[in-house]
Length: 96
Image 1: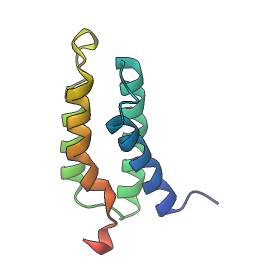
Image 2: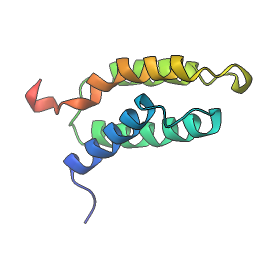
Image 3: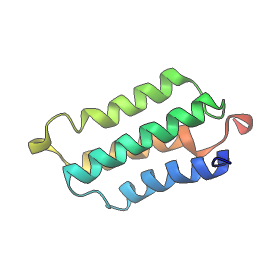
């Protein structure tokens, strides 16, 4: 049996919250976290447990924009984008 929706949401929030706590000070870690976050969020959306796919994609694109140039990576900017993205995954669709 696969992971539950609650477990998937917990994974997504853990990735975001780790970033907010400064766990991705380097480009490579941030890039890996965003790839993982994108996969988990995509699964939650397919399960019908997250709001608009357009909003999720916009949020993920905003986060990825910080990662366009590895030499210019700024952890604080990355954290700000994660902070804006967090509400999109924090609450199940049924509770919105």
